[in-house]
Length: 414
View (cartoon, rainbow, N blue to C red):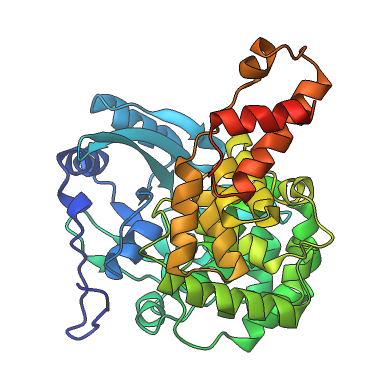
């Protein structure tokens, strides 16, 4: 299949490259050797149908966790009880020369939920298992040969229509796990090509208060994925209109300004692709586009999303690059990636912007503290002040001052 799904003929088969990986073939054979039925499930099936890459490969099976462990062990495969109380055993498989964790999960149904975690019972009923999932397009399964199984009967049709829809009553699915509110808008950003269900959107609005019960790490993970979508605007507008965005990101700019800035940024991103580094994280600059920077500090944002140390450093660099006097200074102090994000957010994407960023990123200040000490300046605050003043002059004059001129300038400022 190549990007779209055809339901003609009544049967659908996926054929992603990972399906024929020897390690996965061996895993599925081991799980099926005594009559059990293992099937790939969820995102890997959905993405294969959309002809996009799989990030995680998950397997569902109609036996209990203890039997999963036994089948894996008999086959000489690792059985790691990562989530055994929820039916999940992790094993490892080598695909294209790299080792990947594969989660094998028993079919299950929810017994009790509190909006964050569930107590489950195991079953051999595929419909029961499908009914506890979030969206119809995620309740799709495929056997080891790639034949797709749609136990609810509407997952393939919804995926073909690119219709993101909760399974059953949206309110019931959300009460099982409030993170599904954010997953709904993330999936809408990535996959939707049809109008949202008014009932689904209304349910997210009614239950938005449940977002307060979620860990910030989980909120941050969903929002980073949403903001990285090729076209997140429609989803963010829906979130804003339903009141969900205000719960997730209280620092968001007023709606008209948020929309204008993000719309402009998306257009500039498309036109400046030949300039911006491909590895630059989209979500960071898009986040900075939609928040109110006049009243927000980097630490505020970091607290809202509970970022890793590396992410904190990168976000702070972009925040500071926005405040720099020029793109040249931004690139010199914070690097080309941060400077390009600042350029896009400032709406400066001309060839001159590219020249300025390249110059700043490659510049090396020719004066050091040791030069002033050799010239007789004692270490201390005065030396640091003089050095910074000289550096500022050097930046303002586009690096035209040489070492001798900078030394003279610094000594006059001691």
